[in-house]
Amino acid sequence: MWTEIIELQGQLIDAYILPRVLDEIVRSGGDFELERMEFGKRQEDPSHAVLRVMAPSQSAMEAIIRSVRRLGAQVDDEGDAALSSADCDGAFPEDFYATTNLKTWVRSQGEWLEAEDIEMDCGIVVERTPDRHLARCIPMHRVRKGQLVVVGHRGVRVEPLERPKERELFQFMSSTVSSEKPKLTIIRDIANRMLECREKGEKVLLVGGPAIIHTGAGPVLERIIHRGLLHVLFAGNALAAHDIEAAMFGTSLGVALERGMPVRHGHQNHLRAINRIRRLGGIAQAVEKGVLTRGVMHACIQRGVEMVLAGSIRDDGPLPDVITDSLEAQEAMRRCLPGVGMALLVATTLHSVAAGNLLPAHVLTVCVDINASTVTKLMDRGTFQAAGVVMDAESFLREMETCLGPGDVRHEK
Image (cartoon, rainbow, N blue to C red; front, top):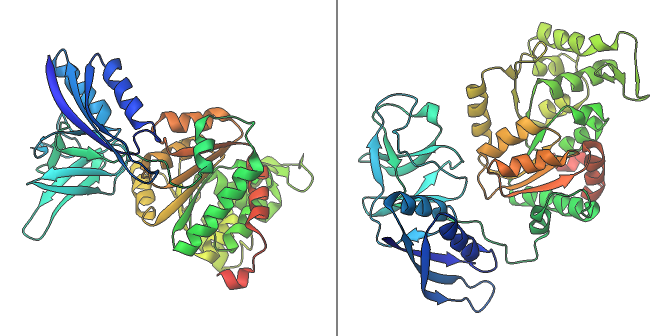
């Protein structure tokens, strides 16, 4: 039998960390003995546990350690992380450490370094120069030959998400995905968190789909942006194109938003809107020249909202502002994330998953979609901090605007 000593510290009971660790050990074919357990007497006090883990083979033990590290387990006396030099551009060594979106530390030359720019499904490089010694999370395509990459799982620590000390509505939201949860209470809490972000100087990110425009919620989102409550927008060509179509022609996908009826030749309107913007050189130029005078895009330009419009193979046009290279779009999204304290993912599956892959676990993330499978899919792909609200985009945004309360745009700029 292979044996390792692991330690756990934190809210082991309240956050169900200890039961989950024990379940991972048994499920992976191992066994355990609880050598020491110290319970925190108050809710804010951490608990501490020491476990002896047994496994029938080295590979089984490595699988167990790999699983429980994601829950914050630390291997006793593990030494420095193993490093391997990348032998080519754009690919890690075979046994590279694959990151989660949790806070991660790497031990190098006896020093624990917090990995900068942490996100899931990447690797970690360690940089040693006379001037600096740091660990940095990077995506696979960005690694360069000769960089020192963390391999294996020794010398790596992960900090699990713990239950907040105060009553936490988002814990309830995250428990199951259901359309039967109390929407008004949840939306009121989301609105309060947005206001708190503004008070703390944190940015709020909106990841939006074209359903926001199709359902007539564009003017609501426009007003929220003008209040200075949204600072970053991730979307695709569709949201921008149909928003501009609505501003220029009063339709979205050829349907008159005021009457809810298709208009004659309305299916051409989004193409004519895209063409008009392309002739001017971009969305900002259209606003500057007075061609685009309202709408979500207009509000974003006026308020200085950071925008990343990421394209897809099915895009019409696309608009000049759309980034058609997916790796370039990812990098643009990464550049906008420092300082983001809250993310609202509304009515878009692919863009929500893309943003979720980039967000650190400490960013409060809310996914809103009329289809419960979108919320479930986001969580299943690793964004386990996401809270789900199953409802349509228009109802959510209108209710949130109400919960945000009255605001003077002039004073909130």
